[in-house]
Image (cartoon, rainbow, N blue to C red; front, side, top):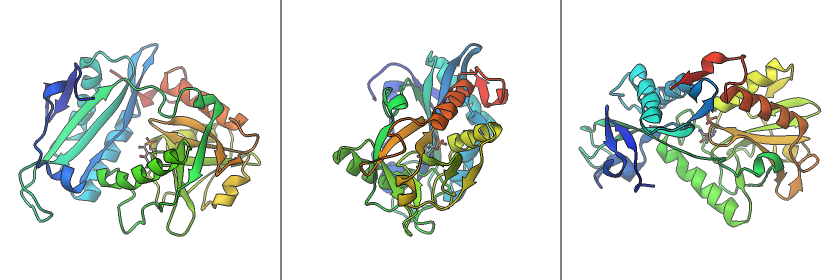
Amino acid sequence: MADRDGLIWFDGEFVPWRDAKVHLLTHTLHYGMGCFEGVRAYKTDAGTAIFRLHEHTNRLFRSAKILGMKMPFDKETLNQAQLDTVRENNLESAYIRPMCFYGSEGMGIRADNLNVHVMVAAWSWGSYLGEENMTRGIRIKTSSFTRHHVNITMCKAKANGNYMNSMMALQEAVNCGYDEALLLDANGFVTEGSGENFFMVRDGVLYTPDLTSALEGITRDTVIRLATDLGLKVVEKRITRDEVYIADEAFFTGTAAEVTPIRELDNRPIGSGGRGPITEQLQTLYFDQVYGRSDYYRDWNSLV
Ligand code: PMP
């Protein structure tokens, strides 16, 4: 990953990919206090466009606020940095990773002289959970790891340290032969995947967990809007794992995962055990939107 051509935006300037390094005493490397975003750009007929750029940047600023990190750049600068990073690397479609982290100015959790640094990298990335799974659907497992409790880690922040829990859950699921994990909250209710929000369909109604301990997903919001436009009823509520077992359809949403159907939870087929019709419809609408083939929400696509 580190050894390739290209440019990374770092504190306001582009640096060659191979030289984009930080010191071993980088504070965030030690304690995980930082925040980041995962953003995608798609090749549309009008040119490459970042999908919901402003919403991602807004969430990055919300994350920084929650963590008490003082952002050294304004939103406009970071929006432009993301557009420039895609363009400078000649990418037609891209995954974009902005991150804010504390530098090596001090060590220890008491350090009070830390500077916030910001980077933006971009690279080509295909389907996060596998191309064939976009039609076939994935197999998932209820995790033995509990999702963050709201007073242990801050669930509204896309914080670096939060992803230790995600990685533990994902590693367990993959080691057991599944594609992804489904994490429950401290009370046993469904929250989300290791990097995706969760949806299920039952009797034509779309259900998704409320956002108590799941990330405020931007794809989740997109799908809720597209579903509502379709005339579907969308209900946010607490969901139990056995409700998922008897759902007609289920899927994950995320910038990386896009709309990925779920075909099995804990070895129980969901519905007919493949991609359901409502999932397929929403997946199609989602791709129409990100590839700029839809006129619904033109302002969601920011041209590079
Ligand atoms: N939950 C978690 C834990 C995530 O990491 C992500 C990916 N950012 C999501 C949900 C989906 O969020 P989004 O649709 O904004 O990418």
